[in-house]
Length: 200
Ligand code: MN
Image (cartoon, rainbow, N blue to C red; front, side, top):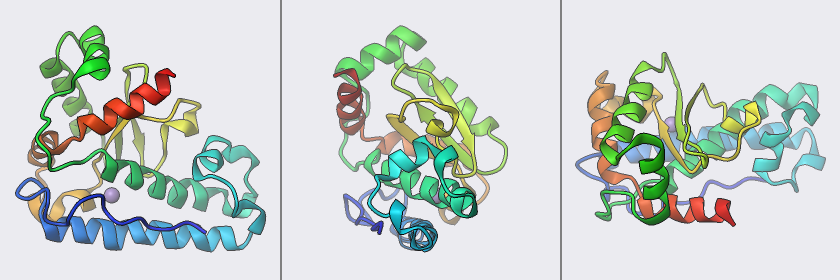
């Protein structure tokens, strides 16, 4: 069975960018609901219980028909949120460094242009979904709780949740303000580590 991990920081650690109430609601209610529903689906097929979530999501065609959609939605929700929390940090490394900085500069010229393009994609994403930075430097979006692996892409190294539940409590309908605030709490150290694992 899958577990909901604790946040890797205090609920109030990202304030004022993301409030404690928002983090509590998002993690304890929304993320938990995905984990609970994923486990409910898995209960019907005990042979899936020992598998890694990422392996389930990389090969959804082999999933049993009656739980495939639930695993895409709720397994995707669990995967996306687990990555999202790790991509956040109250520490003040505001800019990418080292290898990830090199990737961004090669692909986008500089950090500011990368932020502009990523932000534009996040603002243009209609409805609920996610924005990712891929290990090849591409920025991709998905609807709902789909992951890049659903389209045969590699695991992402950075993700941004643009579901309204991710910001409504703090920013109401102002997705632009939420995204601007989010850049202040991106955990570039984690993204760097994740990218280096991919390079190995
Ligand atoms: Mn969310």
